[in-house]
Length: 208
Image 1 (cartoon, rainbow, N blue to C red):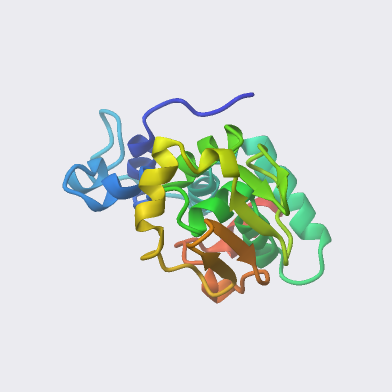
Image 2: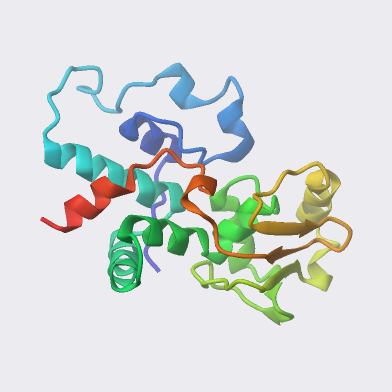
């Protein structure tokens, strides 16, 4: 399966905004974006005039990199969102939020979406009692996500469980720290998706 294996901090610098791809490190003094907030490369500090297309492209790349989705996958999400009733841009963000790796991250079971994706791939979670190891799995309203019983004794899960009770989860999710489980109460509203993305620019890009 194709995936990005380069330095993730470079992606934040390219988009000119923190995407919080490395979890707790992004909040520390070690954050590469805090040290060098300009674009990577030898011409990164040069002033460039950005076209309308460039602005739209950067917004799409920002969304894609935030959720860790490849180009083909992202286009598939957009086409699906476009076929649904409602506002295409908002539909797109809701589809991305419904990814299992994102739900695991939102519940606090991973410090970043990258870590959450890895934990899902390793089969540490169940959905409605069934083991699911597909990060892109679309979680539905009412689904219960839980740490697999045999995984609760692993060192990484024990470390995560110590701080899970202090986590604040979005209003559309429900967390049970006692049994390391969470529930999707409903799908999120646009106001509840706290990522700095102007989704209408993505719609304009794909409508060209």
